[in-house]
Image (cartoon, rainbow, N blue to C red):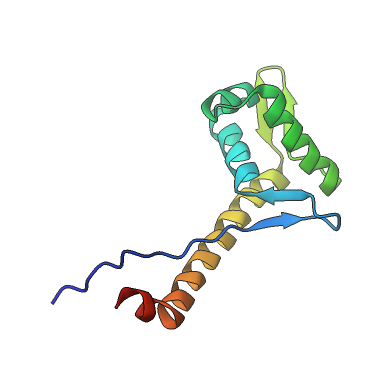
Length: 117
């Protein structure tokens, strides 16, 4: 017998804040840096994400300021991530996968039976 697909799914968002509650890193910053890494350009990343260059640069710059560390290296032919920027992408993706898997398990164990019946 094939198990019935649940009409309900748990969702969560994670991000890192500084001591003042300001966003340091989350899915938005992840998408921006991933696009810069893939496209090699802040301008191309902004275009793909349907954001202005100024908006994407302001968010990345704010994150760099809050971290006190550089995430992008701007070059005449584009931009590339620093080793820290690359590490943040990798680690954020990993933590997101862990949180999603754990959330699914907790939901299945604590709530699914009450909503799916």
